[in-house]
Amino acid sequence: MHELAVTQSILDISLRHAKEAGAKQITAINLVIGEFASIVDDSVRFYWELFTVGTIAHGSQLNFERIPGEMTCTSCKFSFHPASADFSCPNCKSEFVQITKGDEFRVDSIDVE
Image (cartoon, rainbow, N blue to C red):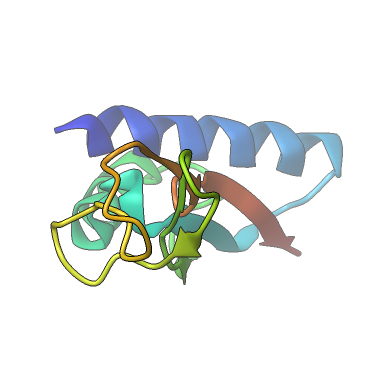
């Protein structure tokens, strides 16, 4: 359900920047979302279609760029891409790991007319 708030934020950011640029229409929003961000694309699209009605973003396209997850072991400093729900280090088997890539979520760019 957090996609509702996330989508509203995307729209607010997009409208603010489009207004600052003097845009008449937003044609696309380009998002960067990490594997661990737990954002469901279809839910964001659903809310986007509802929220943009009556705005300059109505009819715009959402583009999702997914960033693969990466973790780094805090014990041996080995970086790896987890292949399953087992997040322990494949090098030393430590369970003390941290996310180093893949928790991103941002509006990368906005295409306007």
